[in-house]
Length: 111
Image (cartoon, rainbow, N blue to C red):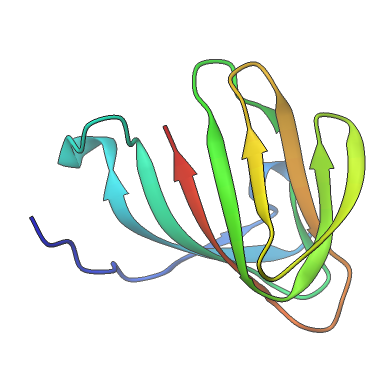
């Protein structure tokens, strides 16, 4: 199977956060790739944030490709930058803020 990157979707106030983001869903649950519910390229725009939310039934990882931000790791705020890998386990919460003038570009995988 080969999946092409899909057209980006623009989202205002993602998960109740500030500003906006774009997401290009490459793999979704409908593709039936074992163990992966979402594989996406995400852009968090400058001065924007994905609001804090809890993963009740799944886990997620972020891999930052560009930029820097502040990752809310289950209530603990941690500075992150390109090259960092963030893990959110089932039952944990997270969010990410971009208070800077450059975008955050990352890969997000929900499983």
